[in-house]
Image 1 (tube, rainbow, N blue to C red):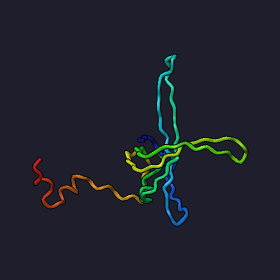
Image 2 (tube, one colour; image 1 turned 180 degrees about the horizontal axis):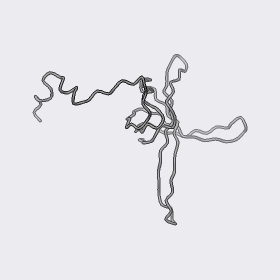
Image 3 (cartoon, rainbow, N blue to C red; image 1 turned 180 degrees about the vertical axis):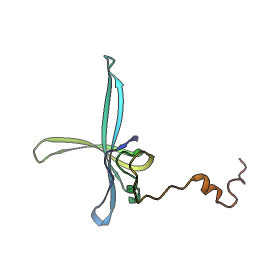
Image 4 (tube, rainbow, N blue to C red; image 1 turned 90 degrees about the vertical axis):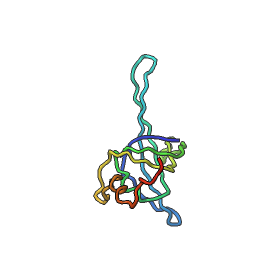
Length: 130
């Protein structure tokens, strides 16, 4: 499953059993449609996300960042301490594409320009037959 949305808070790195680390963050997706009366209905869905592959991505996963995620979604339900029933959606993330829009991290290194890195290669791609 693929979803596109904005982070609702900065990502957090958590350490769990056996020193395994996970990046947790929350994403909101927006959808709109017209009902039978012709009114535009806006609907927001929130996903609690977990990413297990690398914790380095947490530096750029900041509130407001637009991301595309691939993975699997599943629902969870629980009963609160007050006896009230709760439900939520989780997203086990396997791939993250960052489209931008979040706040800048001061620890973030500047991105290298693809054109500059290509020209610094010896031989470049000029030898390709296509």
